[in-house]
Length: 123
Image (cartoon, rainbow, N blue to C red):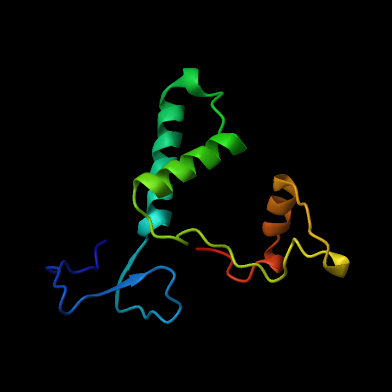
């Protein structure tokens, strides 16, 4: 950028914010790190690889392979318990009269993808 000055990074004076911090001001550096950063890097590299090699154009991530990938990532990379959390506004398992609910994975996923059901939608 033509109007930007280059400065030496100084951790004592430069503020670093996570993109999820709602109270952050525009006086520092915003980073995407941790699990979200890992996923962005991984899926970007995967897309680049697929696009660079036409023989892989039919590659698909199925629900099972995504689940296996995420379990492997979370366990082998040492992410903390609860690194992946989705807060819903209502319990999709609730049943009338205290009966125990049985919910298929795809039904739960469809319920969880509705913005009006999620309390912390986004990063």
